[in-house]
Image (cartoon, rainbow, N blue to C red):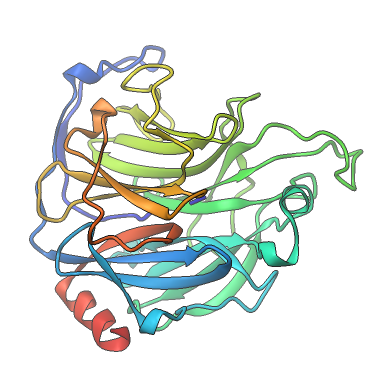
Length: 343
């Protein structure tokens, strides 16, 4: 369940299409240059029945080879709510915070203290938040409620900087019960993706639906900016237990289509898609998929994100049993600081 905002220089050209029509992806030429200022990757994950935030650092500038930090112990242990955090997402500051602030947000859920049915009916309606100015010191822990009492839970929060609005678009998955069912004992709505905007991860606008494919249950959204107001988004069909992708060439609220076909999927029996660009190979992206019934995250890759085609990557350098999280490309200064602190 879980977007790292990557402030990179992107160059692209897009075929303009009317909002009512599906974009012609065959005419959409994406060219993204590699960024020599980025020399590594920081990954944040949780580990199965251990609902804390664990840090992993890439081996050099290899996007799919990681080592544990802090001697395998968590870097962040939540103290509020259920005292358990899942689906951590690391978010780079946007706007005036670019390059000097980062956030980690996550799901308030300790399954060891509840069960899956209760967690969805009367689970936490808040988002865990921590912030840092150096990727080393994480402070300001807070649990911010974003949904009202009709919601059963708030799962897999993540965010992306919306340049046009000048705020962070934050999204998560929730299901809802009638106001008359205050105990949430009846039948809920389908799970849908909700969104809001914030400038500081302290105050949020009233949430609204972002993706509602009822009666299909949708969770675990992650979004990759492609440049020129184009985006690829990845989500889990919780009903079919599959992950699929959609692409928009006209904005975060534009026309979204599945590039490989209306029923195309990337993989089944997976969740928690986490996507990020490669630092060295132009146009190449990486996608982590959590095989939740097996050994956790496995890496996939694509050199044509808008095609919807992804292939399994070499797993020899990727640790097993990492669960839903995110990856942030970082520069040499941050890489050295993180390594010196925890390696």
